[in-house]
Length: 275
Ligand code: KIV
Ligand code: NA
Image (cartoon, rainbow, N blue to C red; front, side):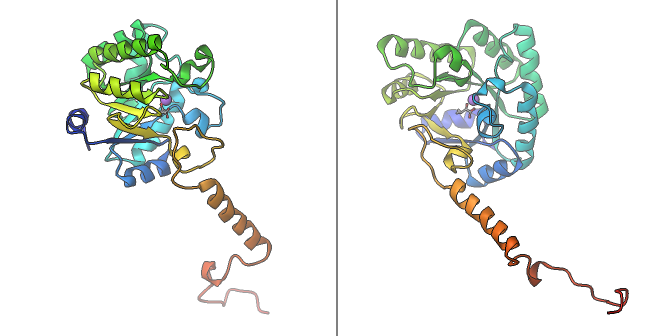
């Protein structure tokens, strides 16, 4: 299993870091088999697995439940788990308790949280000192979608991009081990990547980031509809999975399934009623 020093070294050597999300045992097995460097148990869970309209309904209990299943499916991969909506905004003390619970109970290697508020920076300092690595997340931060006013490109003017760059530096100073950059112009992705010592992992942040992350269900077109511009799809499970299920239904209806191959027969027939 790689560790945070390996990720630093990969940045220095310009070796790309790969990250894919997973939410349960089978997706974790698939993702581990892909050879990815990092698995993210994202709170995108709420949208792609639980069917919520945003990530704001996801709870700490949900994240722990799913991250434990991911751990069972991917024992050899570095796992990052998202802290969900409002679980790190009540008080520093409660945030530390929540971060510790999430990290310990899921046996993850790091936690991830959105934003760079004073409270968030204080939390990062405190848990990093205690031994919990933290990944930051800036640009489009889906937990604050209702404050941002929708899912759209962030940091696309002078002022906002300056603020983003300063925030990334604050996260690095606070001790973050990497930063996810979501949905920002590639020029900003490049500047941030050049300015930081820690790796950047982009999703819709251009090719110059130190690594890339995509959501499992988006990559495979698995239960998702229209996808953002920054996604590249590598399979179409919606199509082929549905076709497979339709074929099964048709086979049962027409008597094509089960056949002898799928059927048990008795060796000794003596207990059967005489014909
Ligand atoms: O929850 C998630 O899947 C994420 C990625 C989009 C980075 O935070
Ligand atoms: Na997330």
